[in-house]
Length: 258
Figure: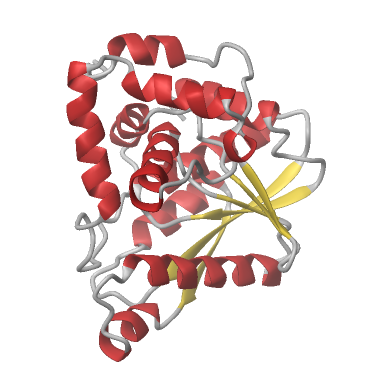
């Protein structure tokens, strides 16, 4: 697949640094049909071809019941990549918006979606679930916890869920969002826009906009925050030496790929 080289450079570095993949893992990629999860799917599919540790791959989409979600393009991509694809129907949207009428639905929705994904992965014989969180997600999550909960915290690069006996991995934590956007556009990934009524109306979106404004006045801000998370060893992050591409990202933040 064209344009995959940069994606693989970030992904393999994270997989190696945090030993995310062990021999004969069966990994379920959580595919929301957004740009992040589809990029991750392509990266792991390509990595599977030459990585020295053998692993299996499948893709899972949790269908939350929103109207207008056409997943035929995702199904075609999985067929092209030779990755088995499973769509798990749920009533999550009905429960949240019709039954409970949640005013702040995102937290409960995420919890229910995670539960459905983990259960489906176990039923399909997977011992790991790969999630498409990228570099900017790391920084935004850290800042959200700081601003709204008054604590230093983030999601972990690798998380073992003892109750489910399943491990979550996040292979794109080194990859800036602008590189995800670039790859998704150039590779013409079949991105499906969310039809959730709460989409783009969240605290996370507000934090994304705040960081963008601060970055314009403080070049390399996200890079320095990420470095602080590593040096502080927040939630399993560690200093791993010079990350592929990170210095150029700090120097060129705000400039789009040509």
